[in-house]
Image: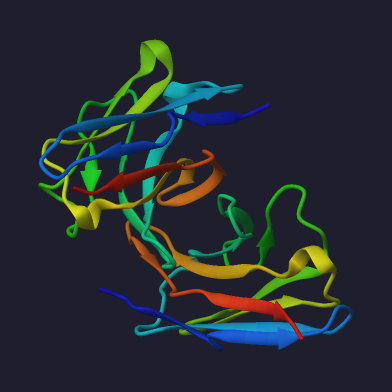
Amino acid sequence: EIVLTQSPGTLSLSPGERATVSCRASQSLTSNYLAWYQQKSGQAPRLLIYGASRRATGIPDRFSGSGSGTDFTLTISRLEPEDFAVYYCQLYGNSRTFGQGTKLEIK
Amino acid sequence: EVQLVQSGAEVKKPGESLRISCQGSGYNFASYWIGWVRQMPGKGLEFMGRIDPSDPYPNYSPSFQGHVTISADKSISTAYLQWNSLKASDTAIYYCARLIEWELADFWGQGTLITVSS
């Protein structure tokens, strides 16, 4: 089973700054079936990115995904107040793996 | 508008049975798999399993096989998650989600909080 490890566990930044969250797979992915979700406190997760780099419908272009193989990255170019949340990566494609989450908090 | 509406919060005692529901609307329910995801208090997301509403055979993650039952009734656009004997460790929020590809979820229900306590 492939394990996804996110880093950092917590990221403290200010609005307007750039956020980078890493997701590392324990084995190289043969396909880019890697997604990112945002979960705000008390809410269901929301799909942000799929296929490693494709934005889901309605997601602002300040959110971007990149990577391949074992290393994937979610980047938020300029943080807005509503972006402070927990972010999860997920491997799909008959896999059932989520990363442990990265909390993005206001500095 | 695609919506998944889940049944309300439940408080149960250990050993009791429970079935929670997830009703889809705004799309052809039979055309998309439904997945269930657990989130224990203060913890991350865990994929429990999924079902094709048009196929009676669900697919479970190893950690949940034998502990829960996933089913669906496409005639009423509803999926279910069921326990025969709850444990305190089943206390969590359970989300259903529409799956567009394998375990990739594009729409989520609002979540159902299950509290199991004696």
